[in-house]
Length: 224
Image (cartoon, rainbow, N blue to C red; front, side):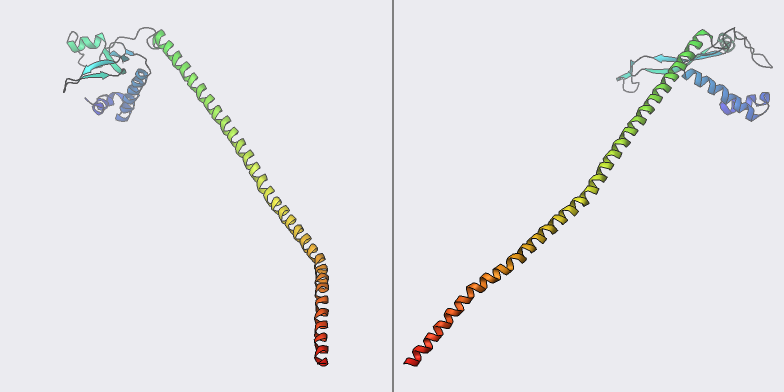
């Protein structure tokens, strides 16, 4: 019998196939979740589901005979109840009509007993610790982001100040160069007249000496 056949078998008793499918899914989901969490699911007269830890061990590969190390793992285990065993072995007979009689659950079994309460409390503490650790991690990340953002803003501000200062420095350099050029031009203007006068003085006597030589030549020619 598979799941679909199981649903069909109880559909008439639960008022329809959809209701039966929902009931089966709900029961199986509850059993699986409780077993994974480490709780023992016990149904009196039917059996119990529990999680069993298997330590690391060595096994042999059935094909090669090689020795292989198996890691530590956890497996689900089902133990049939005494009533279920008696029905399967034939000690008790199944009723012809109606449901299989199952003994009522003892007091405290519906809530899981003391062990289940302790496990639930431990699970709650672990969940609370995980949430607190997650909040702390988020807070640290937020602080780190804020610090990074502040550092980036400061670096950007310094860069902007440097960029603003660079044009000012360029302007100052240009002004200094212009002032130097003006001074050079002024000095050149002042020295130009003096240079012209000195040149005129130097060339004037030379012209007079040349004129005197020419006159002397003419006089000598006339005497001859």
